[in-house]
Length: 454
Image (tube, rainbow, N blue to C red; front, side, top):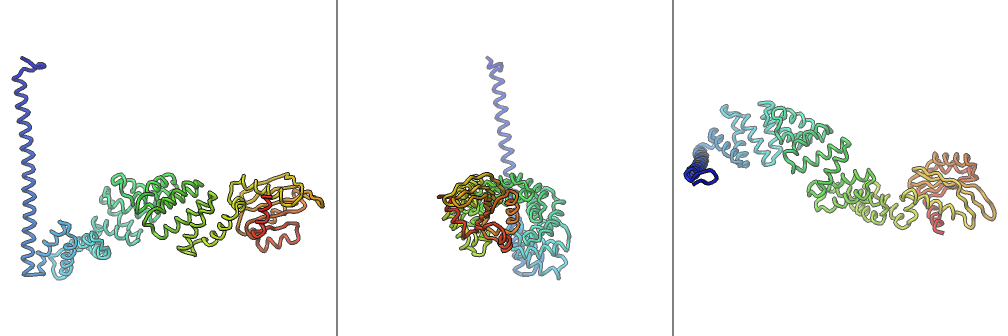
């Protein structure tokens, strides 16, 4: 009989061959494991023997160089960094009197063990000695470069790390530290190239990612930068600073709601550096003000003031926005979109003189101010008057008043009024003394604003 073209005998032969093949594979795997196990046991036995013999020698001769080197090597291979450091330290003290000890090897390994223990000053001293004995060895200069980076000697670090990377172009740790270093000395284009390679290999490296965002930002690649900063906002270490920079980018591009969200997310973190915390609050207040949320801005500015009363212009801002929070018209005058501002100006002109007939005949709007020309008629007089509304709470100088005077003459107006939420300089006041221009400053402006509601 046959089954799908094969007789029973053929099927049996195939089954036997398959079983033999599986048994052979099993035996090979077992043999490999057994040999590996023997090898591990032998290595362990060799290590234990070396330790036992070295300790036996040192019990009789505590300064025996050969035994100390054996002990130090075993500790170093095991990653027992404290013991390795102590033992290599003992060997360093013997180098001057024992030519059989390699001062370079001992200094290098002492430095590497100190790096692992984060004893960076000890590591630096030892690796400098090693570099003086054999200049430009990879392990020495790559670690020295890292230490110079930690010491903020960025130019030295870059020089050492470039040399190290020439020897091992694909060494990730060296590539990473060099990328971080280049961001500090504003070699952002080269930094981007290196950090992107690092992140291809280590995509979860948040420090490299944060540095890459900074390099993009310095290269004016704000879109790439803000994407990374936005991604990092939730990170407990880099989140607050990332949120601060993302919000700043959004603030500069007039994306005020996004900026507000960035700053608020940054402030949710439990651990925030004081300099980042105060700036997050200061800029959050700015984002509120830009959206005319003045009442929300004032308490945040007060928090900034409580942290540092001398921080930037926080005292001035608190005074200013406290007044704004109480006066909706003043908010519109200084901060509202131009259409609302011009609408308010029209209301002020229409109600400026009680029981008068007013006809607005011309309007010119600039970035800093708006001019409205109006024909005014009362029971006692009539005149053509030019009103200038200046959107500032700062000082208005003489040049602005000279420009207003020229406009009055060009339009053949009888007189002018200049309204500002700030003050006028002495030169501005002196200029209008002999001219038909009335100045209304921050003290008198609220009265004019009330007239808008008449």
